[in-house]
Image (cartoon, rainbow, N blue to C red; front, side):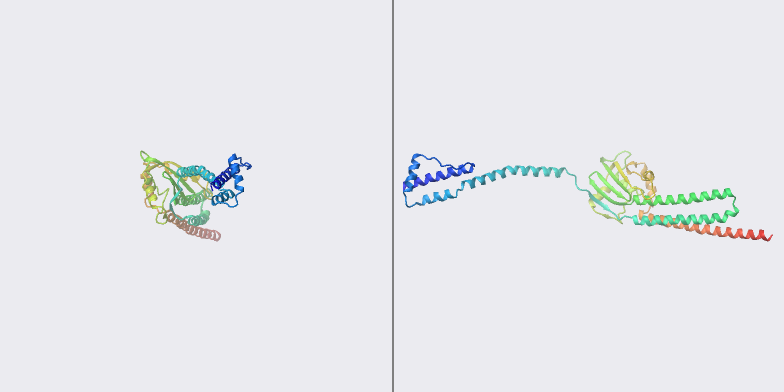
Length: 342
């Protein structure tokens, strides 16, 4: 029995050495054993019955587990090396996210009044044509009784009057569209973007409270109705707390970037002149602006009033010019008949 145990131990060592050599990528060569181990193996060949210890040793050698354990250890080591890299990547991503700016927040939205503007422009153009027709009728009525020079001067005045009225009414419509706020976006704590019809204002606020000639943002928004009008009744507040904080902000406007888009028939130089930058408003200008904004209607209502006023004036001119034209024509016929009879 002692001899069988020794033989089993020798065979076990032999299998372990062979497995180690195979794992290193080398050809498994016959393992050299000591003379005592060789004699033990020769004695083992003479044994006809295997003991339980020998059966265990043979099963271990047939399916060596050492390489499997080694691969598992290598896999664990690789994971241990990859883990710091993954942790470092996660840390870098968190740092990048912390440095990235917050997404823009929409504070206020309002429906566009572009359809009202297009309809009002069509009515103003029509009223200009009607006014020209009325003035032309009046000039034809007085032409027989007016010297040529006076008639030419009156004709020139009529053309200028119609043109000036049309230009003034069109500019009023455009100004109402540009002062109607359609969307307010807050990019960060000190950056606000105000979008209107064909106009975008990007305001940069100061870090400290407004002082000196620079008024506070809440004063500009409250009294600057002729330039920027926030229709809270017709619009929708998307972020209540941020919107109220903007309306109550005591910071000053340090910089303003204007993106002005021209209307049909409008020149770029004209648009740059009529648009009032909010950053150039001073504390001394606020009382004048407040008086100007007193009683001013909302942009949508003001557009409707402008178109109705244009139609009313053109109607009066047409009726008056028609009466003068008919009266002048009749008087001319009467004079001609009297002259012919005499």
